[in-house]
Image (tube, rainbow, N blue to C red):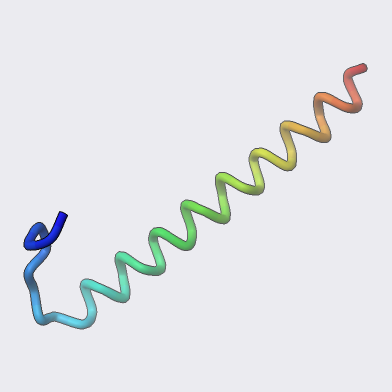
Length: 42
């Protein structure tokens, strides 16, 4: 993975970082919602 994104641009790194954080948050939220939905469906 090294050398895949070789830009000294800090903005690109920040955007990538915030995007990763958002994706992680969305996925964890959907897991929580799915789990509670499964519990309620029983």
